[in-house]
Image 1 (cartoon, rainbow over the protein chains, first blue to last red):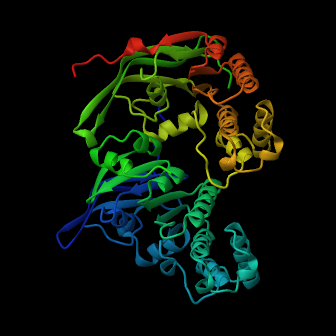
Image 2 (image 1 turned 90 degrees about the horizontal axis):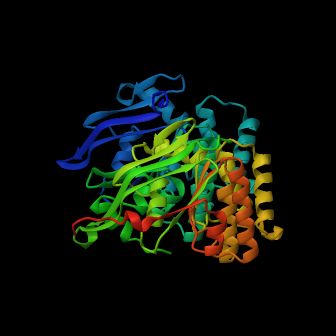
Image 3 (image 1 turned 90 degrees about the vertical axis):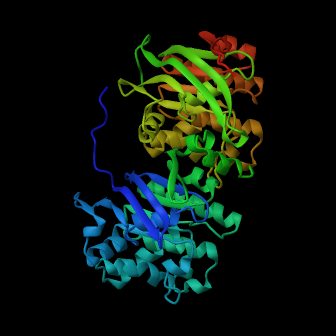
Amino acid sequence: MTPPAPRTPLLSARSLAKSYGGRLACQQVSMSIDEGEVLAIVGESGSGKSTLLNLLSGRLAPDTGEVRYRMRDGVERDLAQLSEAERRLLARTDWGFVHQDAALGLRMNVSAGGNIGERLMAVGDRHYGQIRDTAANWLTRVEIGVDRIDDKPTAYSGGMRQRLQIARNLVTSPRLVFMDEPTGGLDVSVQARLLDLIRGLVADLGLAVVLVTHDLAVARLLSHRIIVMKQGHVIETGLTDRVLDDPQAPYTQLLVSSVLAA
Amino acid sequence: MTIQPNTIALAVEDLGKSFTLHMHGGTRLPVVSQVGFEVHAGECVVLGGPSGAGKSSILKMLYGNYLAGSGHIRVRHGGALVDIVEAEPRAILDIRRMTLGYVSQFLRVIPRVPALEIIAEPALAAGVDRAAALERASSLLQALNLPERLWRLPPATFSGGEQQRVNIARGFAGEHSILILDEPTASLDAANREAVIGLMAARKATGTAFVGIFHDEEVRARVADRIIDVSAFAAREAA
């Protein structure tokens, strides 16, 4: 039997730890993700899942441990060793970050077209007509009418804001997208539409996604693998359907059995 | 993918499983122990035995959906035998994409996705081009007598029998050389049971191996090359 040739993962973390004023938010976390993979980080509030997402995306520096990323040129880099300019470029081009609160991910007083166009201009696009065409194209892909291109996100519903946030992130063809409770706080019918959109885009574009959610149904629908966290520790990891259908750890069993089956 | 007859497609050795219910004082529920059998290319092995004997649990372990407690599940995947019990999640996903398919008793409905797309997905995942995948989905739905007006609708509002036919079509749409069937014909009428038997016969002829549970005795008698009584693997351990 010949195992597949070992290759460098897209993003990998080793022994990450972070504490806030003596309280451990994240301890001894190691993980990796490849292109096309969706990894869900699940747990209750305060489990450290958002801290982990911020560590993985370089928005927060770990106390110990390291995060490595394989850049577009194929070279693996330690995030801590990147210059601020390099890190910002990465975040604007090869990465996306979809926040639960759209106001954190969008410029609320800039038109929808401007929100999408800004990321293109950040990578050097200067042709106004082309930028507008691309923005219109992306609005259509996220099911927003092109006639809304000049409206500001303040005039959009919650579900539309999330879809605009996704368009803004994906316009630069990132390879890795971080998502923090992307469907949190939305009505159920709006959630279903957004989830279906995310599922389709992820599959079509072959994106790697690190998804933080407390909703196990969202994790089941979108993710291939799952990391269960509690009090900053990884409690259980594995194939999503295995972890949800045959949870091993006491805490995972509690989490799974606490969900009302619809 | 055509494999030579008599080639072992799946070999189960000394497989054991118990559940530990941490929410109930750590109660251990033994399920099966020392399960062993082989399935060859082009063969259909049916798991028999009373309800509660662990048939479904065995199928779920074969698919990597349940964690095996002990033993080995070796699957012929890309020319090599790979042990599902020890495989990394990524390897299991690859095996599910290319080698191992699973038809459950119920369709897990995905909001807003039309029946044809749900069915074409395993073929697309295995690298079949889109036109061919949709063509295959259509011919499966035709074979399973699903009215054409439903094909482009999401199955959420379909009847149980209609959803199950979408589920079966999806199961047969991929390129899998091993198919696991958990009571696929339970909610079907006679004509559609016949259609499933026909689909199985066609796939067996090209070397697909089947492992399944069929409670309907007539269906079982017609599809099974061998029946394995799972009660022989009842977990025997001190309570």
